Image: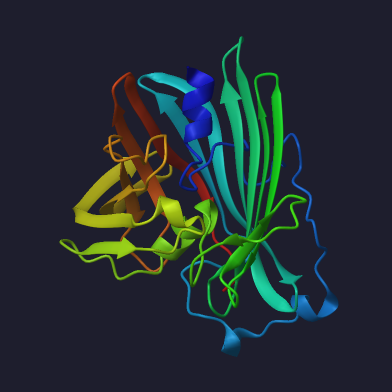
Length: 268
């Protein structure tokens, strides 16, 4: 059960992973398309305003009730080119579990720096004895996507977002208490709408320190902690950085919680 809990943590883009900002993951994620010289050149005037920068890395403790079951990281790794678009390559790394069941997952998103649409989403999952690799190529201009080696295009949505890019997008919203966002932007149309309820402001203490935060409640049509029955809440720092500070979920079989342990801000 612990392994399934850990893998469900990334269902909406929150991940479990490396032991610190300077420690690489056990299975280093591989860029499927290397950054080009042009992509590495800053084009700040063309980019959408965002609260993160390249090099940002957030490190978490993850607990199931009182038991620590893993570590987590969210990282804005680099600027890379995808089909002529400059993108942020973000990485979520999942690592944890028990003696009898382990999880080691890497989720990567390539987010257009100008539009914040998702252009590519890659999952490398190692859960127990199961291995699964998924690659999604998204084409917002045609509202379609391709999965793995399938040559048949599948219908998508305007302005698509994947699991990882959705959480980064939420960080750009005004997030005023009482606001409710209903978004039809998840790239698989049958999973929409995603709802974001802005509940309240709260000041909390986590291993990384004390933070004023805004508490939001996301729900998505999927299994896991952000399902409609998951009752999950996410604390986002109420400052210019808008980092995910804490997450708590109340499920039928227990509480799965995430706490920020360290942060390294990137270059904006």
